[in-house]
Structure formats: C-alpha cells, structure tokens
Length: 484
Image (cartoon, rainbow, N blue to C red; front, side, top):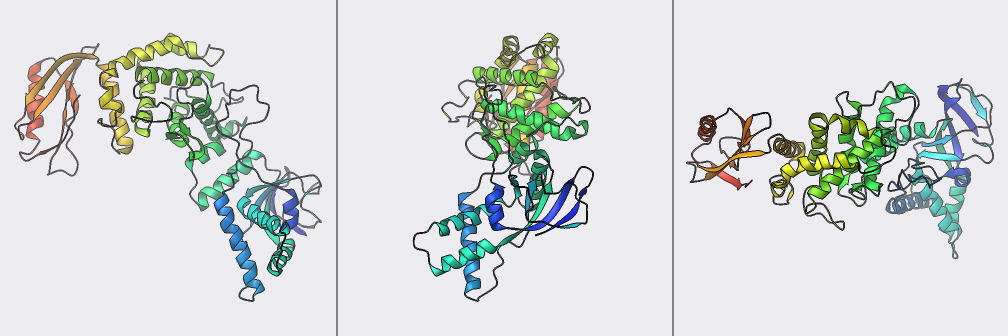
C-alpha cells in the first residue's frame, strides 16, 4: 500500500498520514474502545487500572443496525447493477505510535506492506461505528449456517474493501481525544458533559495547557461529588450527559469552573503555577461539607431513594446553592476555617465548617417551602434568571436575619392585601420584602415589586409602598399570591 505523509512535525515524528487500509487489516488490528465508567471513585486507591483511559462513546446498537443495513443494501444494489456501491467515501481517522519506518518526511510517499508494525494496534479516533458495523456484518455472514449467494457476494466485497484512512502518528491519548472532540463538536451536536469528560481526562505539566488543566480539576471535582461515599450528591449527576441523575455534569462543571479560573474565584488556581497536578483535596472538602450541611438543614427537600420532591437538586436549586457557597466563602467564612481546609490530610466532612454553614442556612429554613417546594416561588422554568433570584433571596436572608416588622398593607387594587416584612441587618441596615407579584397589562412582563433598601423608619417604608402602588395600573390582575 502507498502511505502518504500529509503534514506534521518531522523532528518529533508527530505526523498525519494517509493510506487505503484493507478492512481485514483493520479487522485484525483496530481497537474498539470507550470511556470507562464515570461513576468509578477517583479516590479509590485500591484500584490499579487507570481511569477514563479512552475517549470514545459507547457503540450505539441501534446505530450499528442501521449502518449494517446500509452496507448490505449498498453492496447488493451494486450486485444487481442498480448503482455502484459507495459505502464509506469519507476518511476514517486512526491513531498509531508506529509506522514501520525510523524517520518519515513530510510530503513523501512510502510503499509499505502494512501501516503498522507487527503487534501494534490502531486506535480509532473517528469512525468507530463504521468499522464496528462492517465487522459485525462480516461476522454474521461468515458464521451463518445457511449462506446464500448474496451472502457470499457481500463477504467477498468486504474482504477486498479498503477504508480511506488518515492516521495520527505518535499523538498521545490527550491529543487524540482533542481531535475526536473537535471533529465531533464541529460536525454534530455532542453533549457538553462529554466535552468536559474528554478534555478533563488528563493533567498536563505544560503551563501553556492551563485551559486543559482547569477542565481536569473541574472534571475531578464533579466526579467526586457523584461518586464519593461522603457525598450527599452521590449518584445525582448525569455523567457524560446520559443516564440517571438529577443534574448534568456540564451544568455543575460550568459553575465550579468560575471558582477555579477567575482570580476572584474562591479556589483560584494560578495557570502559570501548574508544574504538578494541584492538590484539590481542600476544594473537595469544602464541596462535600457544604452539601452535607445543605442536605441536613433541608432534609425534607433532599432527594430520597432516587426520587425528587423539590427543586433543590434541579439546575435552579443547585446553581443558586453553589452561588450561595461562594458568597459564604467570600463574605462570611472565618479566616481560620479557610486556612484549615488546606491543612487537612484526607477527604472528610470538616465539622467546624459544617457548623458554620448550618448556622447560616438556619436563617433560611423558615422560608424553605417558598424556596424549594414544587409549589414555591422558584419551581417554574426561568433559566438563569430564576436561579439568580433564588440566590438573591437566600443571600438576603443570610444578610438580614432579624425580622422587625410583619404586617399587611391594604392596597386599592381589586381589594388585594400586600404582605410586608422588614429586616434589620447586623450592620444596622433596613430592608423590606413584599409578598405579591402582579401582572400589569401595560407591560410585557410581570411587574415584580420584590424588595429594597430602606432608611431607618416606617415613614420611608410607607413612602416606598405608595410609590409601588402608583406604578400598578387600576386594572392590574394578580398572578400569584405568593406567601412568605
């Protein structure tokens, strides 16, 4: 066969080759792989095999059946003279670490018996379903007890068939995975969770790979949340965007990434100080301890036996809770607790931090039904906006835990009464909340009174209420009577 060296780096021999490789050679030497089970515990030191060794998705049996039928129909159409079989016109992408030659030159053409040395394997970067389907069809026909003339024709066709192949020579596993992701993300929609799994497979000692290393750290944190025995979220994450779970890997990873890559993030990792894989134990301890406190304080809303009865572990709830974790870390956490995280030698629930979080969450417990129940204020579909509103209400309660006033204010709009609450913070600031949401027909969206800052007396509260009432038209209709 002719092997063409299309491009690459001659010095490192990291090259891209092109060759027409027979189906039978690929049948013997190609490796079918898929990403290992993401539910494996990354902290299980007894396991000797590497984790997430490959980047391929599992073979889809339904897709294989369709491709097998396509191959068979195409070949038999040619046998009948209806059309020339064009089975797989586009190139399959493979990877190998050997090419029967000590040094290859870009632009050169080599005549070779095989594209690889004896005993070497070819890994499939793109085209796994194509080859797997052809192999399955070939095995079915070769092993058939009552082979027909058509079967023999197809077998003969397959045994002489050659795949148009591009070969990544001397590309490591990460580089193969990167090509796989880029090919698939550009050609078809692929789960963002799969993106995080692929790009988060390995850590790079090269400081210029800081984007890759952020993905690595984030991916490890999500795996810990989903697999560690101490995690109250064990089994809650849909890894690779598939299967069981309440929330996608990509959603949690996106939120955690902000705390890692931003200089203002609570776990900021300097991209130019990554010569070794960072010890992310302290991040893990904070995450596990925080959600352990959340699941304890709001136990009646935490999923049990794989069932949800609230929004607390949906995207709105988890997103708002992660925002609250960042807020508590930045604004309220005692310095000694933050310092202690990095001194702990093993992953554990850190009691002092757990008590601190529970104390803050107790301020929210009395409104937990409004916050998390399926009939509460945040159970609708509101995307990121609803998540932010939920976070802001929780944050407000943490900042202003003291209730100074609770009363009803008569409002001359269809005889509706508006509930009013006023709070005073430990710093002496006053805020208020209103209980009703109204729909103003003159506006595109509901007019939401919400709450706001106050001065130090009731006269200012009354002034703000009067201003609010004047903004609601006389024929305003109440949407929902939302109690505190």
